[in-house]
Image 1 (cartoon, rainbow, N blue to C red):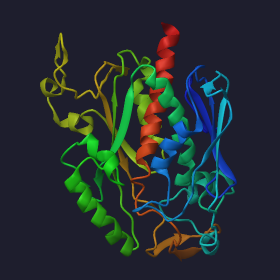
Image 2 (image 1 turned 90 degrees about the vertical axis):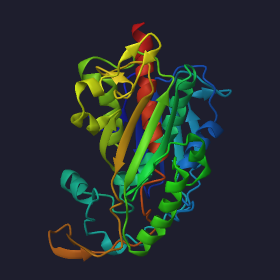
Image 3 (image 1 turned 90 degrees about the horizontal axis):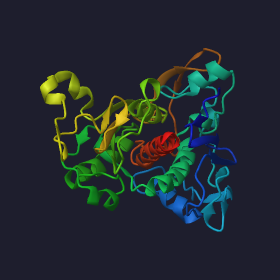
Image 4 (image 1 turned 180 degrees about the vertical axis):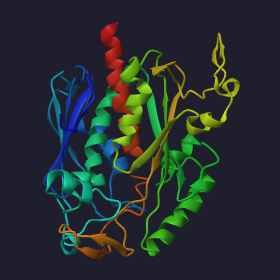
Length: 349
């Protein structure tokens, strides 16, 4: 089936394009009687909103409207429809390059798959598609709140600069959602340097989930870590995911990687809170590798839709990095997976 839906018990279907009339999401399976108002969703959307310092100058208010699924401030158990109308569309910068494929972008693959593509802002392949995910994640947060499950995402690397500390109190005190004050200062200076070069940079986002009960996740194919990896990899700019010790596990001995167990819990957390695809009650921790934004001003070689050789320099209102705006997207996707598996666990119990 077309890949615009995600989840089983808590299922979302997103719609809309970057330069279309609106974007939005339909959420099916949300339990009834949860408090939900537009400000609850808006708080999460504001974290991702463009037009802030160190991000694209596109000024979208990203104001959400609830069209269905609530009554008197509570969910009804029926499908919830959320819509965000586009307000600051400017497609003029795309017109000169509408027949050219942007290196590193989905232009080429979308055209080869469908034989047609929305060249205005990239259509569904644009990072703007993620606004619907964040809106849905705000609703998933309401489900997780009932069990005391908390999810927080933050920047641990940007443009080769890595955080050495994990200060969760500092995350919302800086526009990059960085967890290290010293690293943030270096990152803040790096972004305008790269922008001046007409280039872009990538980074790493870490996501931490606390309060998860043991038992989330299904055997074999619907493992919790498998679904989390899929959720992260479904975000356009993500090119790698690791959970717990991740790739470091390949270099460790079994005696080093195993998390020894005591009556008070695990002594370490190399498993990242997941064993055999099922949560073990420890903190769930994962990291996503974010590639550089493909739309850059530097001149690059490419071809057009007819296969003719050409060159391209992408002008317009593009981020230098998907960070920080991708941070709340990662947070939302983890919430969606955990809410789905929480409801699945309740169903069998």
